[in-house]
Amino acid sequence: MNIGVITPIQHLNGVVELLQSKGDVFFLEEGNKQEVRELLLEKHIDTILCNPNQQTYKIDRELLKGTDVKLINTCSTGMNHIDVYYCDTHGIKIYSLTKDMKLINNLPSTSELAFGLMISLLRQIPQGQKHVSEYGWDYTQFMGRQIKDLTIGIVGYGRLGKMMYNYCDAFGAQVRVYDPYKRDEMDDAFLLNNYCSSLKKLFKICDVISLHVHVTPETTYMINKKLLGVCNKNPYIINTSRGEIVNETDIVNALETGVISGYGTDVIENEFDNIKDSIIINSMNKGENIIITPHVGGMTIEGQTKAYTWAINKL
Image (tube, rainbow, N blue to C red; front, top):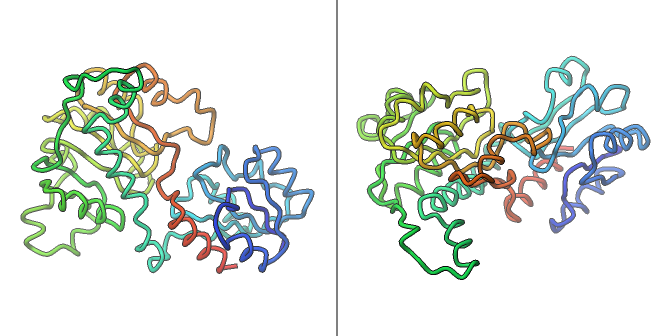
């Protein structure tokens, strides 16, 4: 087995050694698309080990055509960095962590980041830090919100949504949930006290809304101008799912007009293209209340070590 590693792993204790026990390993952890293609061809790579977080291109026909690749092993639950249709129609297997519940139920890193983004927005932590770095000491510019007694909405009540629910509930928030696919799993008390029957109702009543859903045709651009228009409480929106869940132009317009108070995200729609064209990044740089992290949701030492070890053991 010739394994091409196109994501950083050498900082994880024991992971490289485990991978080397599976075959011949070739590293190109920060290469561009052309460099990766050259590696695949030159070293006759049949297996790719990847992760979307630092990948600036898509694994697609342009990259794969004419190579020996037979397997793509992604250490992620999402697969929007891979052209799944091309792989399916050309006999290339894809391994992901999507259904490995025993593993991913013990990976809270992304939900922890969502909670951190929420606190950072509510308390204006980045702005306060910048103010002090310029030798300012005026707290009146940074009056924030406390979590206790806020109404926080969770869109998507799967693994990560449940974790976020628990964090917010522990801080004393009034937590509401929308997920029509999980409704049958909820007891009567939860349905009565915590469940919203529609996304529109959730957006009407919440101070904060946190997104925890996969990208599907149903969820693409789910958060848009029409939905944002029903907001009554100028909410903060947190997105650690995928950039395509929101219409980023509508998010920026809602910020500029005060419809929403802030946007905290770990993902942008065009993160596999030239991010200098990102409307979200450019809006942040112009001073809108936006916090962006570079897709670091699952990027903790503990989480990565578990995930990569699990993924490599599939080989």
